[in-house]
Image 1: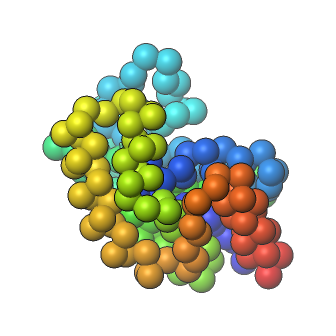
Image 2: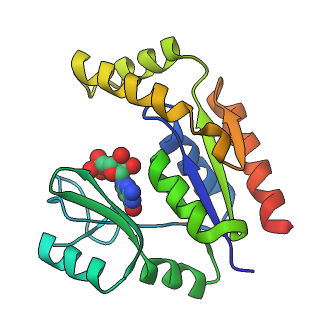
Length: 187
Ligand code: 5GP
């Protein structure tokens, strides 16, 4: 059976760090590169960070049913997973790993069903989530509040994932995630 791994979390719960760790720890995994319609930021590489598509091209591909899932994450900015990306990874004999938000994660699980292991990374407490967001220092106070409100809402979906992983300590959580995924890949 061709498999896939989904890692989702509220913003600031540590999912990027855990996914980077997993990509090193489990050589079978390959990061699934999303397509998006926003413009490239400085330092980003087309085909590595994202497949950057002009909006009309993105919409054309929606019409052609080229996406497993897509979302208008911000008004006018579309993001999604191309079917061709998963085929590319499977052809290489690898297992795609998705780092997506909660809704994206649920949509992917709905598509892959038992082929996918979906993991919800849970921040230990909201106080802690707020601290992490402040340390990251990329968001204003208003944005942090917005993200926490969103995270509270997103936490209500945790039970819809196959596994919930409490991230109270990043290295322990990374190891636990490695164990869960290895067991799933060997099953
Ligand atoms: P950014 O523009 O900061 O790179 O990403 C913005 C948002 O897009 C993030 O919340 C991220 O989770 C979401 N995103 C990235 N790729 C995908 C995707 O393939 N599908 C969906 N639904 N959301 C995505």
